[in-house]
Image (tube, rainbow, N blue to C red; front, side, top):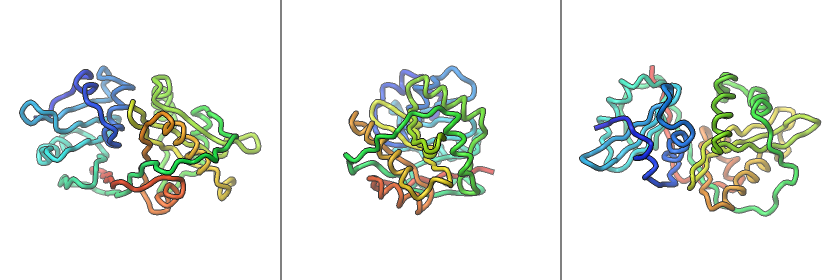
Length: 249
């Protein structure tokens, strides 16, 4: 049985799993009082076996070995979501119009050679860098929803930005976009085209990763292509699993 969750039952669960981290951080940011974000728990008997979140059309799944996959499939189709992300080990069968399969990596190799030029940029500056990198593979969300969400996360202590400035502009950036007491997910990694091939993204990512590693938090990234995966591996990350993101027609 899948039913809407209350915050208390979620906060009683602790895990550093990357899929759980995405959902738990969202819950800690927004709670259960907004119409545009929903949280669900799947039960078998009295045991909670799966956790789901739905935020602005995107669903995240945290599944376990005892999840009822058939019920999850049916729920997804009737949820109204547009995208679904989950661990690739689970064979969900719902129909989709497109699918991305990528890597989940965890920060493993600690570094002491940190850049001293790291700043904490504001969100509008980060958005400018992201837009400068936009392509068919790197799709940037609309400005106002991005600004609203990231500002809210930052105000809740669930979003930290890092960057490097060159020639008076933000040249490279990264953000901790999800954070719990156990883990962090880094995203929004980008460098303006004019400042690439200088190692700036690597400096920013390592600096941000070290900040959380020093707090004994597991640091994750989600990589959708081999080029990005190689970049993260060269920045101290190791592949630990794979994810699937499907678009529903």
